[in-house]
Amino acid sequence: MTRAVARTRRRSRASGGAHRNTRAEAVAASLQSAYGGWVIIWSPWRRAFSAFCAVSTDSMIIDEASVSGLLRRIGEVELAARTPGRGADDAARRAAETMRDRIVGGDWPPGRKILSGDELAPILRVDRPTVHRALSHLERVGYLRTVPGKGTYVRPPADWP
Image 1 (cartoon, rainbow, N blue to C red):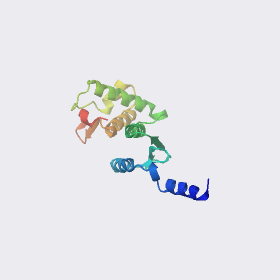
Image 2 (spheres, one colour; image 1 turned 90 degrees about the vertical axis):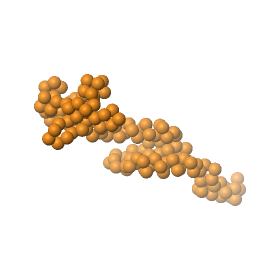
Image 3 (cartoon, rainbow, N blue to C red; image 1 turned 60 degrees about the vertical axis):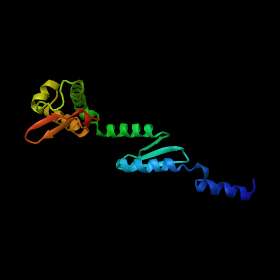
């Protein structure tokens, strides 16, 4: 290969050449504006969307060829970040899952005031602080809303994740 041909090839790769996909770049820019805390780019080299979590202390890169796959993976990461952790919060996670199952299953319909933490603790077989961690998790995720001085209520299904 001659030097002129090699230079031409290098220039076409560096400038994007035929690999540039302006539609994918525009989609990545609109996704980044819609998902705060994420940097989303179209990588022509990988031929995939790459998402970097800008608010996480852990380095995380998600590469997906399709927009739907990327959004599904971002949703999984955000849900995992909002879920109570392991170890000491394992009981809070189980309590939150039990309460979520009652909400989704229709045992606790939308608009219903749920029992207080003192009343839920013996039912769920956990201590009061654990119930409060589970309740605050379900409130952050969107299943419950707390009205100060009134109580905690089940939100409508449209607010659920």
